[in-house]
Image 1 (tube, rainbow, N blue to C red):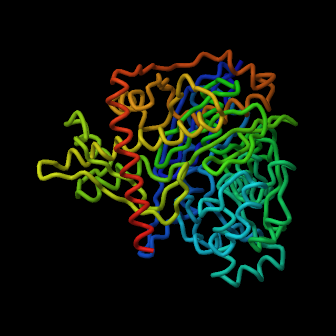
Image 2: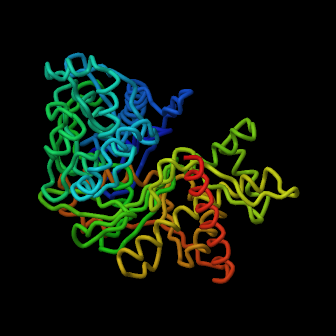
Length: 497
């Protein structure tokens, strides 16, 4: 009998990846394509939706070729995606009407400021801070600066969506405009209590309801592929935001489980027994939905972690910015008092200061480029610690371990420093592309491979443990230095204002 596979796509900020996953829950093949960020002089951050789509087609075709060469059948397609990135397209032509506005872009800060009197209502309904990260402000910006889109909306031909919606629309040749609740909960237009688009929020941002996708479960049929010939007729069986999918992939589904995904930016997500009470430091979100069951979580988003390492490499003029920075950082054992606060696009959780900008403190004449690179690596761990400790405080619990995934976790020095600063073990997943894997597992539930999300716990997990080695007094001194650097960055912002 031919081996049955799920093709899981993970469309990210800098890469599009795909896995073929078998009935055992294990990946058997991987493909990847780079995608570009477009950064303009006014600090706008965009991506070309057609490039995102072509990268998806490329990895899908590579997977289809592998399956055909090995006598396997692809039973379903699952999608995990970068979140909050806002896409807009013409429903009639299927073509984008603008570049996708990246989740990193802060162009909607002015719109958020104009709506500041509604901040409490916004947080109460969405679980999110009223900040430029949410997709709603990005779509509102498009409607404000591209008035021709209003006419398209009046004719019922304007579609707004996060990247999952865009890809599903393209895969189904425009016949489906849908999203799942995890992605919807990141837009700033989704009511967490009612699990639906909120009319008051739509009016607040001026978003026509006709432009938004239908809401679906994270696990379930969302359409059938018709636009990629090699996969014609294959159902789309899951869609979920990448951070949520990574949490699924860690395979622990009990309240109190917390994971950090280390990527261009980073996200910490911790499962809650129910929808948590409001708080100013962390977001409340849908983790995923399976059938009629919805799992909630607390989350903290960090805008620049891996991208801060890349920025340092670019700043130093290195030929390969990210790899060069990592190599430099590895040549020294510590940053020796240098702190880099990578607030180039503001500070996310738990600070939520969109006006903050990057700072470097503690420089002395003896410091070198290597110390600056190491400070960028350390900043990843410090920012993760900020959110981790906020989750403990808000939840009123002591979290025993941190689950870790994402490209930057391959750096042993970073993982060890993370354990030292947290004073807790860090469990690094050694499974590559955990977001794609988590999406595949949800697709497997839709296909009947597994009966429930709890059954996924039986699938073997591969992890490595980093135990704290640094003394508590030493880690405390380092972390207090970081907190001081963040405070200085915020005071500079206030002074300039």
